[in-house]
Structures are given as C-alpha cells and as structure tokens.
Length: 261
Image (cartoon, rainbow, N blue to C red; front, top):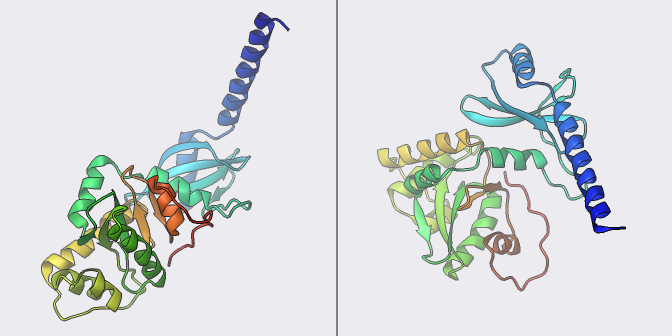
C-alpha cells in the first residue's frame, strides 16, 4: 500500500469515528427537554447545566444544580426515565457517579483559598498541601488520619485539617468546636476531646465548613482535597496517596479505597 493510500484510509477512518461520536452525542435529549422533564417530575427548582452521553451505553448523564449543589442524574435517549443514584463499574467497583460529581464540583483557585480560612490546624511543613476533611467520631477517619499524619511528619505532604461533623454523630459538632476553641489539635481530635467551651469563632468555622463543603457536593468523611481542585471521599491507602502525589512507593500495588461513613 502506498503512503498516499494509507493516509487516505487513515483519514477516512478518523472521519467515520468522529461521525460516530457525533451521532452518539446526538442521541441524548436536548437540554431544554430535560429541563422541562426534571421540573415536572421533581416539582423542585432544579437547573439543568449540561447533558452528555454517560459511560454506560444508552444512558445520558445530566448535570444539575439544586440548592447550590451540583449533582448528577441519568436519563434514557428518549427522556422517558429520570434516574437518581450511583452507577458502579463492576470490573473494579469504581463509583463512576461519585467521580463525575467530584469532577463537576472541582474546587477553583479562589475556593482553594477559602479552604485556607477554614483550616483548623496544620501538620507538616514540606511537600504538597492536602486538605483533609474529618469527623471526630468517624472510625474510618482515624484510620485515614494515621496514614496522612505519618506522611506529613515524614515530610511527604502538608496536612491541613478541616472539621466536618456528620449530623448523625451525636455531639460531634460540639467536639469539633471544643477542639478549635481550646486549640487541642490532632491529639484532641483523636482522644474525643470535648469541653464546655463553645466559642463563637469555633461555631462559625464549623458551620461555615459544613455549608461550604456541602455546596461542593461533599457529604461524607474522610475526604481529601488536592491542589488541582479534585477531591476523593473514602479512605486512601498509603500507596494510593503516594501515587496521587507523585511520590515513590516501595510497597505492594494498592487495592481499591474503602468508603468512609
């Protein structure tokens, strides 16, 4: 085959590939159609941001904003059904819905600066900054805290702690406020420290943290927020953290992360 014939065949293949992708995108309903369906179905002021083919053939991903939070819905090609909930990839257990929401809610540069204001204490002074969102009563968080605190002390990262007490953990909010007001740091967080000191600065920081992170789609702990604005909810093993930060790891290959509570 001559070079000219090869290039012609290659360009023809690329053309049909692009055409196929365009056809796939065209199978999703219009934004206007989905907007009407969403309002009629949920009777709520939900704003459709974007609609595009999902990772699952035949389903379309619908990006929406509801009460300041960016969320993901799914619909079929004829918009006959609206689907809420998570989709998992069976081959490796990846929650692709959670990944899509995290990407949709990526923190901007100005929002990263906002995290600085909400940080209650820092561990370490070297390495890439990682914002770590935790709750004093979360058992998964303690496992995650041990990993990242050790890495911070080893100079592999700078750990910035944000407190996010879950509503179903009785007394967790008061514990968080006490830790801030009495400046008890990680030791106080681990020991379940709580006092009568519920200062206004502590209350304000905890409430602002809850409100801000919930608007970004964060509802669980532990959650890691990285300098590129992406975040991950659920415990990350040490080797996964090192891989995420571009650090050399001598340990065995990582397993999947364990979801937090």
